[in-house]
Length: 239
Ligand code: ADP
Ligand code: MG
Image 1: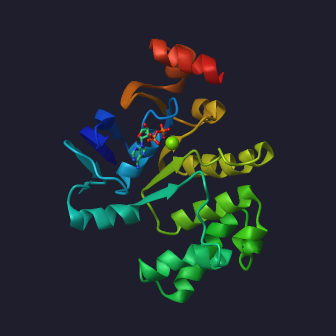
Image 2: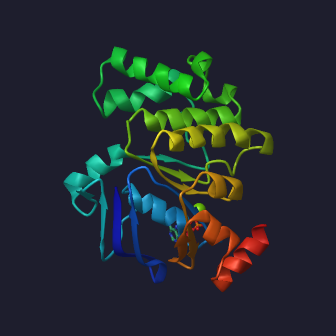
């Protein structure tokens, strides 16, 4: 589903991603951990075309991200959820979840609303259709953001610290939605500090350090029997 080959990225003279290669099978859930500034967000943004890259190639579901025509398709197929929920504040929950279906997918009003209602029910928010984002808790807003991303019927979902801005008691409800998506077979890349999620839900954990993938393997190996010295230090710091 995702094929990254020898990709790099610089901001001016600062090289933030260095010769990254990665393959992710359909249905795999990959947790990405690593210190602040190691390039995790840049990497995710690159995967849905929000960020250019130099050298190498990226293919998502066979679409080559370096071709402008394909870029458009990839953006539709790759959903992203950010730390800040980024809902449209002036639109109701229902409109937040239908607007891209209407404008980008050219769905009819009825079809878009039908799908939005189904997705809002799925994240447990069917009764919030007419509410505005400011009337919701952070956890509820983040669940709307997930429903909004799912409304594009993506093949890949990217989560960039989706629970980091939430009050501790609201983290669980968002992780539950993410866990159920994983159980349904969604291909997911999840940047997270939630080691419980990485250990119990992810098939695979990547450790990013200074712009490289410094370790990659099953959670039990990466988190419980780390070999890389910087990974050992990282786990000690966050543990
Ligand atoms: P992480 O998500 O792991 O904390 P980021 O991908 O946000 O790391 O950042 C990686 C590096 O790239 C950092 O040194 C950061 O300061 C730098 N960086 C990120 N975005 C930009 C940008 N738009 N312009 C310049 N430097 C950036
Ligand atoms: Mg980040």
